[in-house]
Length: 440
Image (cartoon, rainbow, N blue to C red; front, side, top):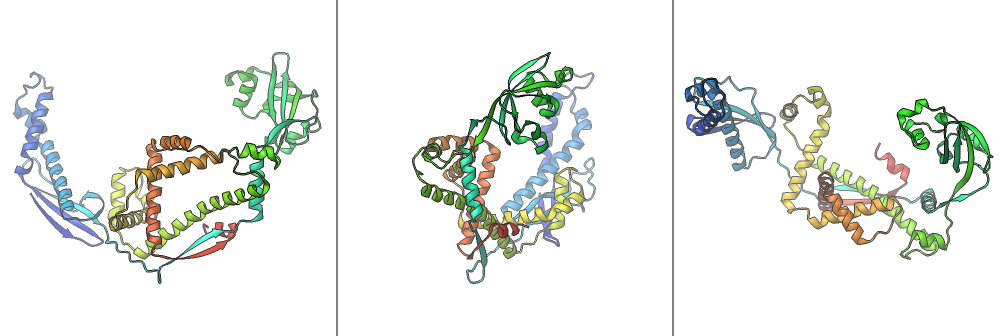
């Protein structure tokens, strides 16, 4: 076995691997004996086929397979031992000459590798600057948040007359069937569709077409208590009688609201509610600005590192490993994004090795708990017991995909935090409108 490395242009290298008979004979003989045990050849009992026949049938392909396997393993071992940092994977070279596996015993395999660039990022607060934005809390944000919060704890109350977007309980009746306690929601209707109901009172009647009243087959089937394939046989014309009219009433800012919305007693009056709303808005906005800051630091490090890649090698590798799933034109189009992802991976690896960064199980759990708390808050539960968050976080982490997302998020935050310590960070407060423009 002999390996010669020849450095090429564009951050690639050629590995010439010479494989001798002694390198693969033992593996070939073992494979052929296994073929003999399983071979089903007419005229011979299983396991009794002469080796001469086995050799004629399988030796050439087995030698090719085992010699190639030995060559690739030796190449990977050689790269590891020489601490060569590569990108992509070992690729058969286009310079490879045809190999005669039938008549030769010495073979030369040619492989191409992509060489990773050296990463060296020295940050200086005097020169390396990044802006961290914060968003001004506008009056419409505060009023909108308050209104949504009050609506979350609102309720339906009986009223006498349909005026706009009430919820109706009705009886649908025709000769063939009668449906009681059916629901009609005006809130999802257009002004034109809603018009026939405006001004109606409890016990008023009107003629309706259920195909127009309930837009989808699944809705109609559910209301009428039938299967979807039975709808065609039902006359859609019904008499509708209103039995109940309910209007959604937004909660008032009173003691009842504070007890429902804040059962732990941490908010008991309007001033405390205003402070709570401001804190919540600041928390939500900070998630957006932190996200933007992470993007800006990442972009700055990519520009600072200015890493070159073996682009042609990587494009060929992507085409090969995807086995024809993507055309070369597709790869060419998406390559800039892939290249930046590869550069960011190299930068991450640089900081991990330099600062010995790692993600602990406790950090993963805390991030999962934060994610769980956000989900509960979204569904109107701003305060959740810690043991419930613990259980929910464990469920999230048990999902491999979610675990990877959380790990990547925590890991990237560590990189950004580590780099930020050596950056000059200027703070700038802007409006939400101007902040959104930064993403355009």
